[in-house]
Structures are given as C-alpha cells and as structure tokens.
Length: 281
Image (tube, rainbow, N blue to C red; front, side, top):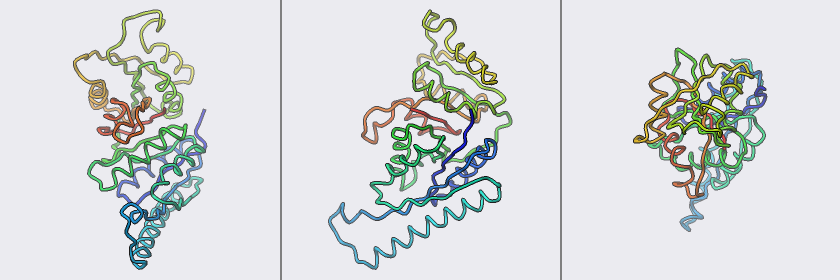
C-alpha cells in the first residue's frame, strides 16, 4: 500500500508553506503526484446584507483575490519543482459559500488531502473550519491537518494512534499505514482501557499491533488510566511527553451546525493539536 495521488489546499496564509512542505515530503517518499489547489472566491457579501457595492470596488476585490491565488500557486510550483516531484495545479473559481463543497469534491479523487488547522486568532477561522469540515465529512478520504503553529522536527519519528477500537479509528489507521511504516516507533494509545474480555481476545489494542506487524510496522500498546481527566487531555499530554510527531485518530461528527460539527474529543484535538493529525471518518 502506498500513496500515489496527494492534494494540498493552498492559500495566502504564512503557514501555507508548512502545509506544502509536509505534502512534498510525503510525495517524495511515496513517489506520488501532488496537486496544489488554490481558490478564487467570488464575493457574496452584498447578497447577505442587501447592498450593491460599486463596480469599481467589486473589480478591485476580484483583482486582490485573483492575485492571491496566483501567488499561492506560484510558491507551490517553485517548491514542487525544486523538490523534483510530479505535480499539478488547479484553481477553483466559485462563491465562498460553494468553496467547501468544491474542495471536498476534488479531495475525493486524492489518496489524502493536506489542510491547515483553523487558527482561532484568524479573521478567516470560520471559513477555514468549513473547509476542514467538508473535506473530512464529505470526501470519504483522510485528511492530514497541519498545526497553525507549524511543525517541529522530532528527534524520533514517533506516531501515536488514539485507539478505541471503533470503525472510524480502524479507518484512520488503515489510511495512515504508509506513514506509520515510515516511523521508528508507533504507540497504540488506549485511554481508560476496558476490562479484559473476549471482545478483544486479550489486551485491548494487541490485535491491532499484530495486524500492523503484517505491514512491517513495529507497534506496542500503551495504556493510560485517568478517568478523572478528559480523553483529549490524556492524548495531548502523552504526545507531548514522548515527543511524538504524528497523531492518527478517527473523527467523530455530530450536528451539521458549525460549533457542533465534531464530537468532543475530535473538536478538542483540532483546537489544541501541536503535531500533525491524520484523521478519517
């Protein structure tokens, strides 16, 4: 199993370079094509507030958006060429209200999509959240979320799997196998493990360890019992303690309302993550 077709969302943010760098590194290792996708968004603000802006203002705004997309694509192309990978570029021209669904559509045709973690201090946070929500919940493909604080170079390439045995967690692990195979160490983290039973055939998580071994991945089960602490806090603390550079987990979604889109643990991880996260639904 390997990735052959990757996609990365491009924008004018300072951290887009981190996203592109992560995507290029994986494309190089896997011999994959990388498609950079930028957006030229049409303004829809006048339809929301019922005011027609002067045509000169509309044209100026269009020009800014067009130049921003072109700049993002140019930077991507420069990085891709220097890395020597196969790449393609695409510009999505649509209204802002259609952007998330359009990005999700193209994500369906890639093995994995790289996207940025919404920055809580950014004016565009709501839009960033809508993109992540759509790609994660509507593409049927995994996402690689890059922290807005950037990535750090870990001394030990170590991955943590947040394992609860659910279908979503299984999907995330399967989608991340090529990345797990490149890690020196993989920890199957079980938070507040259930009592040994026939349901698991032994220790919770050991069946996954056995399965991963068939893919040449050396993994081990790590248990943490802290019933008084939230699961997301246990996961984040463990990642920090061991210096891991990747988290793999299933994504749980609830309501379609933005503030309730993700389940509790998923939402907390996305808000507080300090390392890249591979998520699948």
